[in-house]
Length: 266
Figure 1 (cartoon, one colour):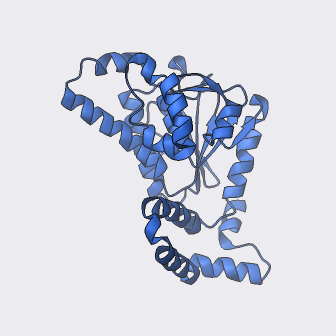
Figure 2: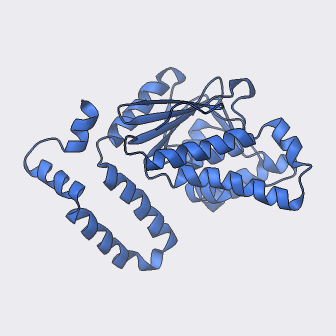
Figure 3: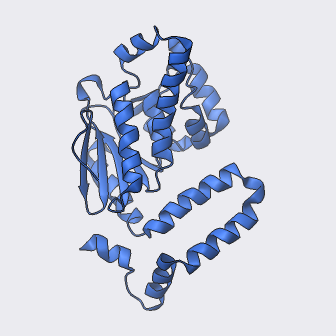
């Protein structure tokens, strides 16, 4: 996994954990075309890298991500219809790269989390938020709609909460975000790193292939609910007979740590 070559991201990798930091602190890590492209590329690369076991997505400065960059929004106002379609596709591809990454993705969020920033949060598997973080879907107040992030957000919080928050554009706090399922844990700002590390350590106990398979399994259940029984029978049979499944069962029976935990602890 390359950790250089990105202008708007700072990457760190250690012990199988890739930390991806949005690095535009002067504009509260607002999204622009360059950052969008780099995030998509980074997660596509992480998906292919066996050295990456867990990804932590966070940001530099005072805010996780305050939505779209003002200059970027000014540009899109002058786009043709075809240019706006292509731009929306690139943005959707970024969220999809995070969502479909076979490695567990942990969001570490704080400060302002607005519009497209909420889409980043919704694309993560597990999210830890600082108690002073605040969230808002402000698109309607700009005369537009949260259309690109809607599939990811609605899947997380459900249509009822989406109706209220998308239509009102109201700000809400980390406690409310946890209640509706947008985030999973809330911590004091001082203990945010510690809380994030606890989540990461739990994920590192899982087998890498099992984690990737479970993410894909959940997507299959969502996309093909009527075929769940037969598909799940096939999934479990393949995993039990695989190398990692055999190692995990053997380790359990022999009362030892499985190989993937030993690799991380070295």
